[in-house]
Image 1: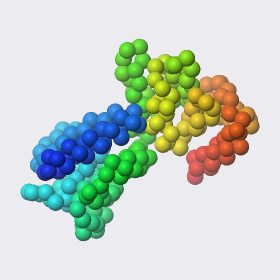
Image 2: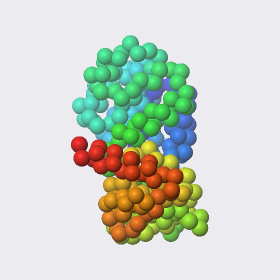
Image 3: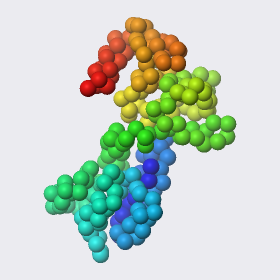
Image 4: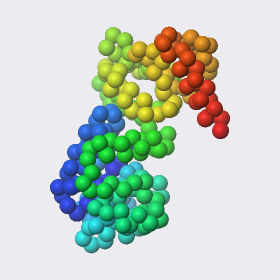
Amino acid sequence: MRIAIVDDIKEERAVLYRWLCNQLSKRNIPADLVEFESGEEFFLAEKEHPFTVVFLDIYMSGANGIEIAKKLRKTNSDCFLIFTTTSTDHALDGFRVRALHYLVKPYNEKDISSLLDEILFRMPDSGKYVDVKVNGSNIQIPFKNIIFAEHFSHMIHIHTTSGKELITRQSFEAFTVSLKMDSRFYLCNRGIVINLEHAIDFDGSMFLMEDDNNIPVSRKLLKNARQIFMEFLFQKGK
């Protein structure tokens, strides 16, 4: 994920950069954050490698944020555009360039956290992955490739659609931070998270996964598991 911060005030760029880094780190989500003090500088980088998310100040010297956004939408129609501004006077203009949100200054880190959750929820599946270290190498595992993961002996065993079992040393809480924000993943037992996309059936006490593994569900979650699975299948069938 590439994130651009476009603001002509250095101090405000630095604060937003720090808060984004904090929140991304808490979710174990790798990202490339780049700061720009002008629209011209931003477009040079955008032309070479498009951004996933753009935080754009409206009131800047030179081209203002609305002008930059209109130009951006001619070449990048998919990025998440967030205006940072002292006013919502340009709400109609923001609608026309499909802005996701307005961050009205002064905002805080809690606002950034909520906004990041929304961005991750809306992000296409191809952009969602977990970053783990396996055998000394950092690798990215797309959400869609995870069948289930279990934690024991201080290690996380990740079962994937390729048939490989990847093992990484990480806390279960840190590993599941980003997964829990995706409706496909369900924590069905202590130290076990499954991807409902790869669940074939639920027999009342365990999930049958497409790799032929049976995943037991905590007794206190049996009723909830059935309901979650049925709701997931319903939404999937729409």
